[in-house]
Amino acid sequence: KLQFLYFIGKRKKRRRKRRKEPTTLKMGRKQMFAIKKKILNKDKADKKQKAAEKKTEQRSRFADQGAAEFDEQSVKRVQQVQSNMYLRHNQALGPPYRVLIDTNFINFSMQNKIDIIKGCMDCLYAKVSVYICSCVIAELEKLGDKFKVALRMAKDPRYKRLTCGTTYADDCIVNTVSQFPVYIVATADKDLKRRLRKIPGVPIMYISKHKYTVERLPDAYGAPME
Image 1: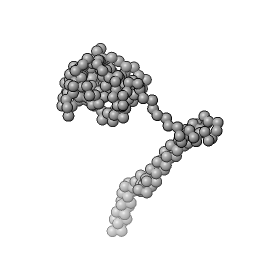
Image 2: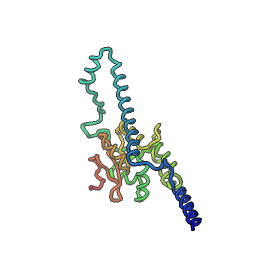
Image 3: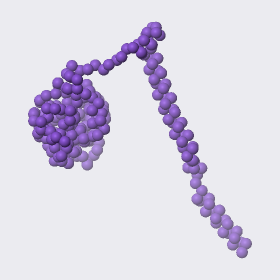
């Protein structure tokens, strides 16, 4: 009987050893919170350091410290407004319209069975020239065989190609439009729309009720009213 109990006790010990988890995985809530706090504090310190470096760099331009303080307090630097803007109205926009298309816009146009050039002309009641960035084509190439038809559609010889240095399509479109506000941006991306709405005088084309519609362009008579 004693031998049997000794054997059972040994078996239980073995099982406990197997079940035992490594100590590195056992971490309490307080420890996790402390680690997260450390990372966040480090980021804050880095930001503060960068801001201080920028301030010293700006002050180094002035010989006198009083002049540097006066420049910080009284001088306001306003972004230069382009000559084609009248308040929020862009006078550079007019037929033939230049439409800059996005990756999502091509895919959604295919899903709704809309020809891009014909759909744009039906919306704007005017001649349209479609532009596409090289980074949009690169993005479609990366997506693989699933978007082969969309890539073939993007390489249409009727579309004019814009070359750019950036790899991310959204950044490229925002930079192009802010430098040259002569385009109507056609997109279905919510984040890109949010970014474009901050730039004055840039109309946004999107799909609504299986048709193209434009916001921030009062002359678009063909756009369906929402």
